Length: 293
Image 1: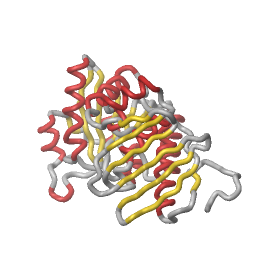
Image 2: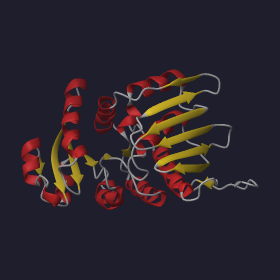
Image 3: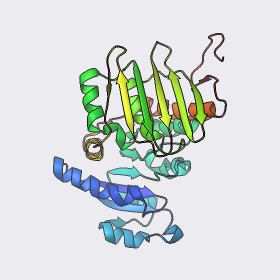
Image 4: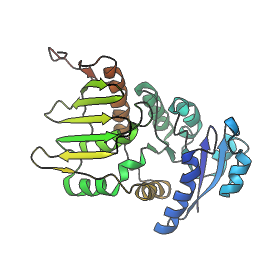
């Protein structure tokens, strides 16, 4: 049996409360021999939440005394901290250096340089690693990729939330159908509505639209024919991919994809501070004249 450990700054948050059950259900449904067995939390019940001991009793897992003890007891690691990625590098460091498969929950990092450092640690340590948003695995999106491939001419995504944390869902879906290659972006804002356009430098482009209460939506085109791609069922597909990663070492999302997503997100935040001007993605250079209008 593959023993999976989970680490977080504290337990009793949405992802840590739901992912153990989802993982167990997927393992049972798809026949994977794995189990979440150990957890470790850096803090205990901040703001009056459930204590680590109470959470472990609720989820029937063992509380590790230290991070190091957890790493010694398990075969694979889930690094959580889903809603505050500013701590992700600190929390993930030991796991990424340990050589055992590591899944890092969304959002991977707060900026592109941090993401680069985290990927480098995993690479230097020979640690299999991936990160993603579950929305990347929605059934309709996976079916579109099977039929049309993963290098669309145009993609538009829409969704709710904020640019630092929640935008990752849209970027994962966008990257899944466009592939790598985004070069620059230009942004506009109307109140809390944010609109970002990405140029891939080869005639392709993508649009990102985010606003309060906006539902997740996605439209994709090959340049001639377009279609809507529904965003519905994704958690069990994601858990299936996670089980394959932990048991078979199959990495479903490349580090190249992850780094580009982090670069796209960082460039968008910069562009929103300077509306109507093009901004290169971090790590991309451009010598074209007249880039900014």
